[in-house]
Length: 619
Image (spheres, helix red, strand yellow):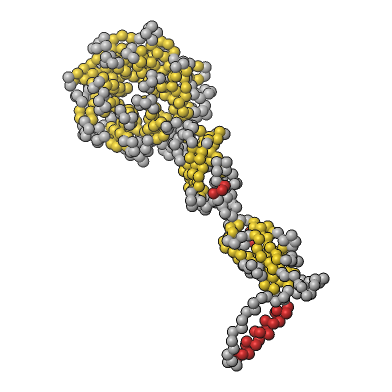
């Protein structure tokens, strides 16, 4: 490209020409257009040069390139033809901003001009003559590209192990810097292998892990300065970084409550259908009836209207949900009456409505309250157990539906000063009932009672698996037809752990592995559920504070017996980690051995309210 020589002789000639044109115009004389010179005037020689053969003198651009996007600095580098000048002046939008001296390379800082398009020119001086370059357009961009949106969001707590990781950027970045060395995914300090790609627009970054993300790890995205926009500005992460957690379980929908803004879930029951879909039944303090819902794989759906007593009767105080061998849901609940008495009502879901299943069950003791409600299904026959208490007697009662009538299957009676809590019931394949509870009388601590009923009134008792334990919380299950398994708290020094014991064919209680406690220090653990998975492995659900500093904030821990040792399944589980406490928890295992959990937890905004949370495995 050519530049222009602006010598003193040329300037005199131009002034003469302009004056002649003005005079001709005023005389209204028409003259032909003056043609432009076909070649620039001869350059004047510098001192010491051959006057008959002066050196040609032109200036052009080496850097920056036309249309370049530049950042905080831009390299200015001219190119000369035949001879070098004495100096070069840089013009930006017609204003002089810098002077270049040999070797005529300048890293010009753009902070003096605004971001956006600008026109650059250069004027070179040599031997009193000036050469002007052609203009060059650039765009100044000092702003780094940032993350506009992220998936998962920074600080997310409930992220799937199969999560696709994406970032939407504020402006395009260069593809040649995008690779798995410039963008890394870390779990703790371990690097996770990912495939990194950039969309055609240059604004969507995608990280696809080569395997499911590890559970219970803090995931972090690390981006280095090799990823830049066209101006060289590096991609900037937010000041707080970009991280999230991958827990062992994921929530199924929102927490359940009939009145989400003002509710207190007082009792609930939790089961899985044959397809592995959870069903829940719960009772709220301020919402009448027993609410039953089923997860259809996408959303929670109500099964009919809430279950209630007669018009005007108080709300239910307890509920239990079970499925029979055909997968039909049945719900039992404790119904207070207007006269102060209590009864148990049972309903069966016929596919469209809840229908009564036998008459209401009245307690055997006069003027008694009912609690510790239990229900199991023997094939299609429900068996109900509950605790009765009046002024003189406390009784554990078992009732079975027989030809449409509820008949007593026996029970145990004690004086009312003997407390019975944490009552559990199990059935074997013959329909024998196993009742377990913790009882306290005069002796300190709690004693675990285990009894078996075979038909009406035929009772046999097992030796006590635990005596004098510090907490009454008890979990139980059944292995085969006779081998009862129990989990009781046991004191170990200043803390309380969980001891799991099994009744063996040799007629003795044997510990299953060592005692269980997931948190070091003086934290008290207790078991809330025991189940066998389809592979015959025992799964125990433990409640325990996450720290000594907050003993009232209890979280959940799952452990599974694997041949000869306990293994942890996931880490501490809480819907609002470190802030709220689990109030009640239950566990279910599907036909594939997947562990589902449900628990009530106080609301983080209002500790007087609680919600029901249901979780599936993060697999």
